[in-house]
Length: 504
Ligand code: BG6
Image (cartoon, rainbow, N blue to C red; front, side, top):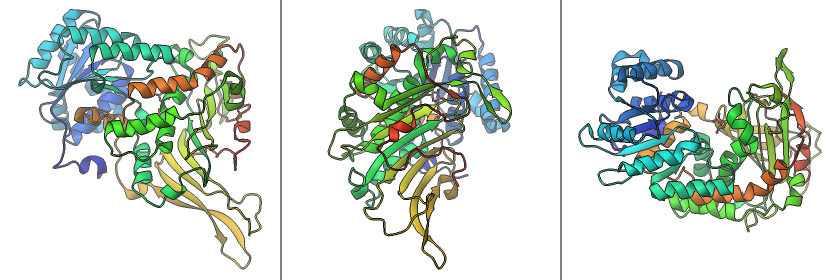
């Protein structure tokens, strides 16, 4: 299947040979996301013959154990990569391993030897697929071992979210990382920015002149950004109990997407030009006062529910969740951006677990026409909507109002649909795109230190208010019956979109 983004690279820019060092190589992120993404890149010949994938594990593994491990994980998460023996052999040849404790300087000496073992090529990408409490010690040890200096090749670290738990911890983390690496060497991943449909949003906005005149407060009533998940928290209570839906999704993924929707056209696509524009949006956000929180933010937790006859556990009954937990599994917030383009236009963001379906989308809802010439029945769509579907079935949809064929003038909503599926292209996974960009040194899809800090500062009043609450509203698992959610759109036209898989 054609692979547009990468096919277009054939014969043009390719990443330089890179040692991809994965700290936390036996962990969940590595097996579910990183290994499949690297195998995809290998398939498109984007790793090059001299790149290597070096796992760092604490377990007493041998190199052949690591090879078998990678083989088994790929078999599960990207079987095509191992089905063809010669192709798998080429991946296996790239695998290397360092064993030891992350806090032990000897492990980094071993890593230094491994990095220099082949061809003198030492470009290195360090992926921190480890809990944040380890970030500092790993960076310090890399620095002490001379592995942070870009003397004979690039050195880049990739940091996963959560990037801090609030403004103070994010600042502290930035400060620590920047004491070992330059900001230009730090890549803070927000995998939503690697999603095809999110990147398409930029193209759609800035490669089409037809939208720009409409993209403002004169024509847009409000913007909805929704990420709905049907699964519960699974085995992640340890992390989620301290995070909740707001930190896990809104402060990071959804606010980043909002900034892309709202930003001004950048001067160029250089990373800092794009990030400067996103930063200006964050900087223009209307300040939230403690007394506003109850009117602009909603949170809730899933209670027991039933879907297709199956009983779904309440959040409090999930493994390792406290019986009296007040952690939110649903959060929604209404933001305003105080600038010429967006003054008074609500940006409403919502996300939750154990909702009816897994659907993520951005909906730009336009104002209804100033005069209603036509008689409308209740179900008729009045507002034009432009929807970017992030998943599933990535694509765009423009809803217009048209005449129902017939002698009478009846109106109906019609959808102009441009599904990515229809143009028949294979799509890279977000992690594949992002790893590829790190190897190329393109930082535009990664958050800069000031963006992360600004977004924590914006949401601090909400987190502070919620931290004081001793109870939380609930919704039955498998539903979107969230107390207070509708009121967020009281002043908006048209109410919430239905987040159904089949929107017909
Ligand atoms: C992660 C969150 O960052 O994003 C998870 O920690 C969430 O809780 C996931 O499930 C959603 O990502 P995606 O790509 O499946 O929408």
